[in-house]
Length: 402
Ligand SMILES: [Zn+2]
Image 1 (cartoon, rainbow, N blue to C red):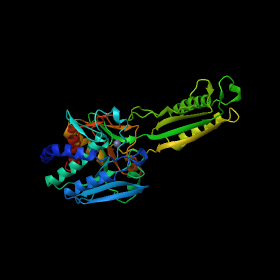
Image 2: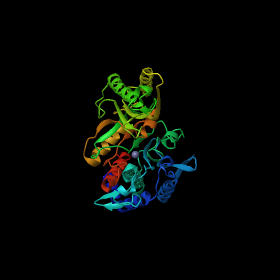
Image 3: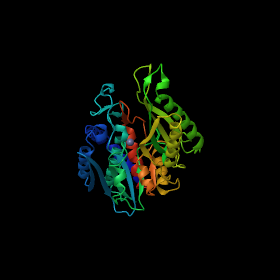
Image 4: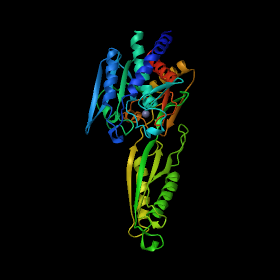
């Protein structure tokens, strides 16, 4: 019956949750590399909030040029083993402000939803984690596990100033368990235990520009880029063809995506061409091997015409770690808590995106990635549903008392 009590406590926070979200969203928390100032002001706000609950907090502030990249850690309880909830406080930039129906930093509430940049990604679960912790404190229960709350920086741009560094600070113990509420399904029926590796490749092809009526005097960079991309596409799909039903799609994906403007006129043979490929690779394979294959194919293409030069660069890379076992305690507890609160049995899945779970899994920590996700991350008119914040909070609180 304790749990019902926790649910009632969490439902009682509804107005406070909305107010906290609105105040948090009003403080932009965007990476300097995306034109922002970093996370420190938002971390100040959240630190003051947590301390007003009577929690001790610790900041891990890292200097990133002129900006401060702030991570915030709080812990409650004296149990030997800790369950950590890890949410990120940075957001992507709002994008085209004119496209928004309202100011993305002045969150509005409509039809049970809160609209604003970062309300879903990852505001929903920054707030849900905080109020799950508050509910445990207010219930006066002594939780079976210590409650760790980690609010991290820099998730959107690679985590170098966030979990990538925090995981080296000696905060976490070998018996600790982790929940990363930063990906999920609309019904909350998916727990992610595995992620594909991601590799973004930039292919710069340098030939020689010439009038299109005399192509023999130039080197057509676009033709060579198109030829190479077609070869890469075919080769990678054939070689890396393993399939794993835990993932959707089940196979590794290799997609030619962005193509930079080469020439303005139809009658010019382009002397340079820049294209990109997005690779999402099953944990069975190494990204180094994929990269090596791409480079070999580029060298072969280069040899097809004198004077042609092709450069391969990695513009983004997140390696994959061993999946978390479906039999691990945290996955079983999460499955049970989701079942108790939502009345569903979640399935265990792998995803093509990456979360900070990677950094933890790389260290051998067990991590479940779960949230009820409306899927509005990074979009214009991003929103989260208020009842999803409280439902997530109930599932999290349930982990500590079941
Ligand atoms: Zn996120």
